[in-house]
Length: 444
Image 1 (cartoon, rainbow, N blue to C red):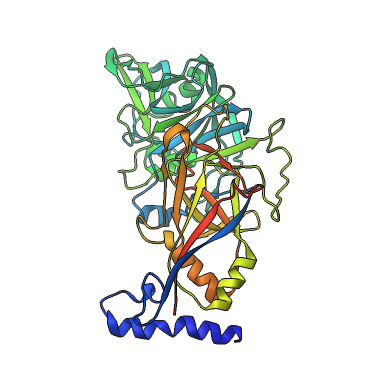
Image 2: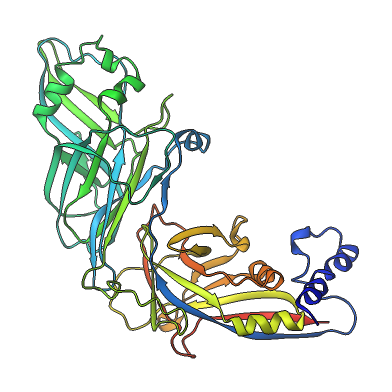
């Protein structure tokens, strides 16, 4: 039987099923069903070869018009500097435009800036919070381009340092004080008073052109980069919080007050914001990736924040066997276990997904993950840390059998730009450790 005959045999099952159950969606034809008559149902295991593969970068912000269509920019942004024996150094920076709370700001007669603070609402810390952190804030000297798509390795052009905080002890779940009242966890970075005196208080007189519209303001003050220079954790910030923003406290001849800049997405112009990421694998197991795509590796690694992924590929001999037998695939799922006995103290990703791996770039999600909630991938916790991810790839395997193409897949966190999880998995170098696809099939 030729390959084309086998393909026709697999696909010919679709019309029979359509007659028997026409209410089923057509993308289910050819699997997850048993045709009437004499059939043989069974299961088989297909080994997956797995190895750690690099990822160049990931998209962190779409072009402006698309983001507006989606409701604006995500309010959850990552900021920090972490260290791991397994993953090396990871850095997350926040880049963002900021806009005034109101236009045509007037600092009054003879204004004097008393202090300036940048407040960031904290919701979570991922990593070791026992080590202190140093932060710096820089002015952006080049504006964002609204028609550009931004990637995780974007390097902005920076101006002067305009804010600094040294020796911060991260406490993402500890209440703080804000304006003399109890508030949730906040990061408060003191800003350069002289800068805001000359660039804001001395300019904004109620009729200054630079403060007459949001667009003109963003030409004048292009935004900020916030970065952590040291530390051992990644902080989750909420840019939409009422506590988040930059306050310029000042007094003039008549009064004492403050002016405010924020990241709010509820204005006519939505400030562009995203996090960028950087990894340094020096001295870690990831410094020199073997990428053994033939035998697999003892342990494989997965990172959010544009780090490495675990590459997977079906055993081609098993694929050839399935094609030649013309089987109907009822279900196919893979079980991938987390590594045991490691000293990585942080939790793994709560959910993974499979995408195509195209060189060092992530491609589309496999078809099983292209519907809401499809594909599975949620971490299942077992006894004695025998934890695993169970992923449904029935539709993908069906496509592989009919096309006879066996692409490399990438196992990655479902959330990659707003979470910092890192995961170590049992690799594919030993038969007892290999990730295995369990295929439930029907043989006509």
